[in-house]
Amino acid sequence: MVEQVQVEGNVTGAEAPLEQTEEARPEWLPEKFKSPEDLSKAYSELEKQYTQSRQEAAKPTEETPAENPAEAREAVENVGLDFDAMQKEFNESGELSEATYKGLEAKGIPKEMVDSYVEGQQAKATEMTNEIYSFAGGEEAYKEMAQWAADSLPESEIDVFNAAITSGNSAQARLAIDGMVSRYRDNGGAEPTLVGGKASASVDTYSSWAQVTKDMSTAEYKKDPAFRATVEKKLGRSKL
Image 1: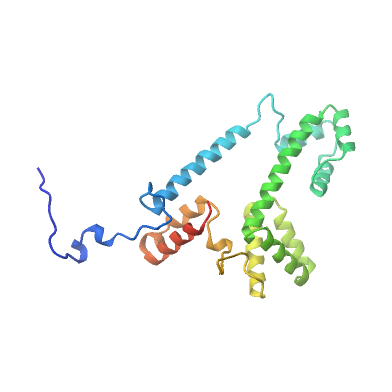
Image 2: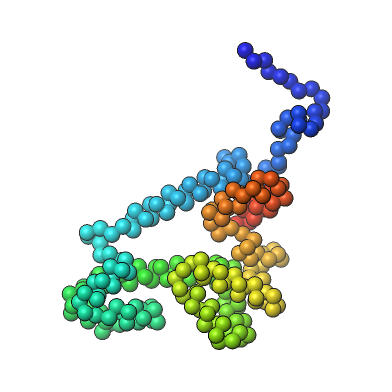
């Protein structure tokens, strides 16, 4: 039987009990979690489960028309119609004209199937737009930055920026916006968002638990108390 060892007096150094070096518990941390790392792991797992459930729900069935762009293109081109022209029409107006609907229906593609595809594209466009706004710190911040760019930059640079924003590639859009936000601020532009008198740009908060997990998995987080405190404060400001 192992006897319990009691530590008497004030023991310091490597022999000190672990409790003496334990950091203060953040006020924002829910009681059911022992540490910010536990909170991050729990929400990361929830994100995975949520993403998986959405992917399962999005799988096309025999009763539901496919919303995949490749399948839609094939269906349209197989009946001799110009898919690119229809896609351009949708991109410019956000919808399809009555004439386009009639042309598709005449070729055996019912309005219900077209609507299913259009609704899917509209949902993706809305999601991408919201994501782009979030990269800049919100819709208002993005519009202010965009207005500055339109007034200050040559058309060639604006064209490159717009191409990145409309590419449909989230990573490419974020790089373009981060660069534009930096130039905007360097030229006297306002901070993207103000909360309580302090700047709250996208770099000062987390937008996903994947970002939290990435920071917490670094060697710097494990070894540097100052960096660890910065991550935990940033997590406390984030609305995930």
